[in-house]
Image (cartoon, rainbow, N blue to C red):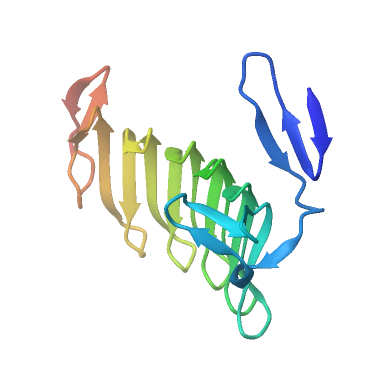
Length: 193
């Protein structure tokens, strides 16, 4: 079911709680300098009311440095940051003040710097990082924000630096070395080098 008014669409599916999705095309963009953070509540206000809209910060040259979508004073929607030359540096999405979905960062040269997914503010799944050259730096597998499964990192020359498996909070293998232990159905096995 979808009900819409005042630039806010409310959705409710059977067995779920109500969530609000903002139509950012019609939201007002307001300078962050016109807004007030109430730290005790953790809410952003405009004229003594929780802010709904897009808060914008700009560099002295007029290029936006950051845009954040808010609903009732809480981050809810897209957050984007840019370098002073207008190249995008960061993008993520919030739901009720928590990261949800893919978060991505870029180097100033436009190449990917990092990418990973979040659910209710907790890191989940594969999180990757790259050197400024574009070469892989890290590949982490996360479950509920904790390492679980194969974890790898490389030096910029491509040589593997970390290569281990994490299971139930324990690390199998060596950091700063090649993987010498593997888990098969929870049992440690060694591999010949």
